[in-house]
Image (tube, rainbow, N blue to C red; front, side):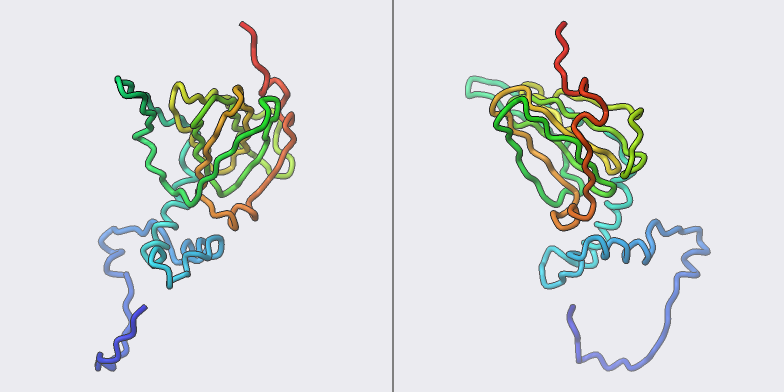
Length: 216
């Protein structure tokens, strides 16, 4: 914010958007939406940091409104191989809404990390090394979610690069299938925001078969 003391205009006036609205224009977001975003993401007010601004706040409001309307989906990647080696990629993953990332590596393939849910936070999951079962189930209630909800089960592997998008209002978890499996999580919430949007459920809440390997 910059104050210019050289401006000599002393007039007081008020503007509104009535003429604009008469043309049929509709606002997608309101001041109330911005206030709500500020409450859950106070970093939007850290104006002393170059990355934060009114434009950044508007962007965050847009993302917060739209991220929840996106469906659970796989973003396809691929592998390019030549005489020099291999290159794994996911060119359609644009890091939409991402605020942070972290990598998880279990000591044992028998260790299951599940279930962990959010109402506001979305995640992108990518297996950088090895392979894993990743499960996601929609939450109809955070205190006592229905056990009849469909459990979406995915096998992610570095041999077939894919990024799994898990929208808000889902619980998720994973089990590594290989030693030294490494999984990257890209989150749309900061660590502080995530702490107030954290819901845990037992690993077998939706059944033990979710994590079993079927012989066939």
